[in-house]
Length: 430
Image 1 (tube, one colour):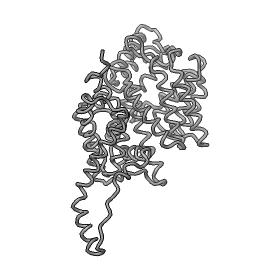
Image 2 (cartoon, rainbow, N blue to C red):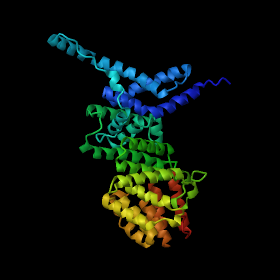
Image 3 (cartoon, rainbow, N blue to C red):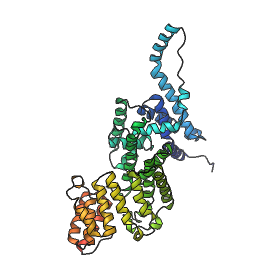
Image 4 (tube, one colour):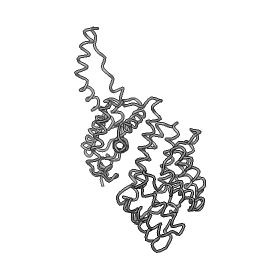
């Protein structure tokens, strides 16, 4: 045994380094070249150089710094090439007027400025409202998550070419719109930060409850969303809603291992073995929630949702869950951001706190809501409540409808099993 890493091991090391360092490298370059797309190309050039050199020369002691330095050289070359004609004309005019030489821009010094600010600029750029939501998600995972096009496509169950087109169009849109690579001014920041938080939230949700495919969860997306949330919290430590989002993600993710059985079949919240919940993540989430509540007298939507998740996290058993408090928090959330989905969740909480009849009254009021027409969770909830009331035939119909609406294979199987239980006149599992 020589202890020399194999080519495969070196490539794995490069992948790991790229995942960690790519956002910092791209952000540092984007500030100089003023073009996110071009910055990524330069960073990719540095990655290619690593793939060529590291298997022969070994992984550097500080691989992140190696990537940054290599990319930095390419950025300097690019900027100088792009500016050479304009500078020559400028220098000529300057020399004619003053008889002196035009000063050389200190590109090296500019690249060595605060890297944290650069990453924050990249966050706001990748999540700019000029882009569609799908484009923001894809670009964020590519630029800030370091995921390959293939990984993003696999996570969202779409073709690799579709993701590639989204990313290319997003870069072109940013360039055509001349979106500045900057943290927005204070009067614009709140609205733009809301877009950033929405993107991270959407990424996590798709990982936590996959909308399509054969898997109940996609852990890679959950992990990336949590990492992005933690990075953002470090960059904006005084924003309550950022900490609220981090709290929500940490607490939700704490249940991951308990959400499926050995065969990958889903286990619903009230049936989960709480000993399998990740209590370190719960502690981190509760600490982030406390921080969010300390930073602001009013709770925003993410902080409220984190407070809801905390009610479950604090209950040692399902029976100890404070459903009355959960119902009250949903009412507060509904006042803040009225939504049929929030009302549906409030219906569930009301049923748990005050009986299935109360919850069903609210759920029935949502039947004609246009936005829920194809939303499988509405008939799922109504099926649950009808079954609890012993109205099994009606419940069966609702579960079958829900199964026809979901695109997730595991969830469809679960719903059909519940429909079969109702057909036998038996109450399905919670």
